[in-house]
Image 1 (cartoon, rainbow, N blue to C red):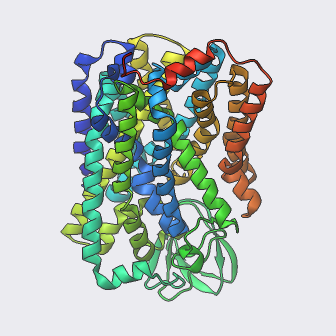
Image 2: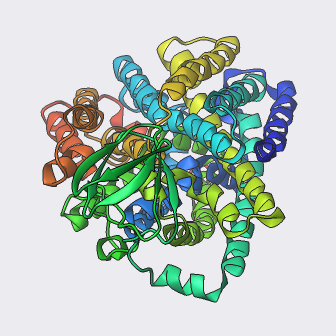
Image 3: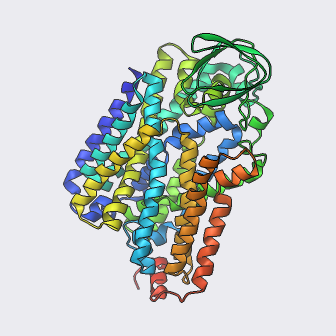
Length: 554
């Protein structure tokens, strides 16, 4: 029954989308809402779109899994908007472009670069969108016991229908509504949890003890095949059969249900710190690399610079009437995001002491929706679980709307230009393609995959936008080669890391979180290749249009 809490969010999404039918007549209406969105409304919509599953569920889950250093993620997410405010927002709006590939051609006059940029949009949006649908399926499974595919299909259908009906205008109103909803449904349960757990638990959350022994008989359902390092003999009930594990390495099978005895020593997972341990409490990210400062900087580079390159975020500034309004949108967004990100720490720290066994199961993404029932097994716990489920579903839908819109724009406006009908069909097809991918990705770590999308965006579109806006010598060849290098050194290297699975250490860090070196490499490549070419014709006039305030008259 708790799963039904998502139903009002879905119905509201569809109703608001249906209201956009009357205003949807042109490509500009579909992609940028005819550039008539006010800064306040747009900021709420940007915030609603940006606060994805990685924010609503992922940050708290990463705190449970990796420790308090995971709180650097929201720092990077919010800092990205400060950089966007200073470097990108107003000039991007002044280009008159409808998409990021549109900007590439408008600035550099290269249809080939536009088509390549559209392919990069497909990569980034795909990496970001699959985890949204995956998280929708996981949450409904955890709170309501529904089959995983139900949440995935419902999320995909809701997004496709909303966009096909109302385009960007519908998405804007839906996302603004869902931001307010998420803010309320995230803050109110957090306050209730803090009051319900009591002073002792609050004190323990701030000064946690290492989760070294099971305080009671604990059932763990493993999401993936998991290698456990056992330090002392322990007898577990594995899928109903008692089994004694001696010291050494053992594998818990995917979907296995093991019950660990009270007082037994908690097994360890290589490269993952025990909740409450000294590495877990260190205010830096490590992930078993042994280089926490380097890992932290890599995540900050990916999240802060990647924000500037996310295609579904960039297009938002094209919906404002002018550059000044785009800048105001970015400024308001920083405040809204800052308010939201005060609270993931509450869920993460409480999850670390109340649900530490999730570290073993690999299901830390579900910590937020699992906390209320752990604190209160009665009506109150059920009610707040339902509220958080509704908020989580709002997060999936709001972000997915922007991502599917970016996919539709890349296909039907940049790769295969067509009219309004093709855009609508592309939105439905994009969702239909992503749903099967999400069905296959049931075991992925939502936060980790979303971070990979940020790394690709930081290594490709961030250099294109920053140099394209602020450096007149950028050439089409320089942009093309630089983005190719950025794409290969981010997405290519991360894909190779998944195949090679290097042992935890510096090599694993540089391959799994490449933004620290892939972003400078992309920038340097663009600059060096461009210096070997002549500046494109019309660069001076294009730069003037980007930087002159269009609201002023002579």
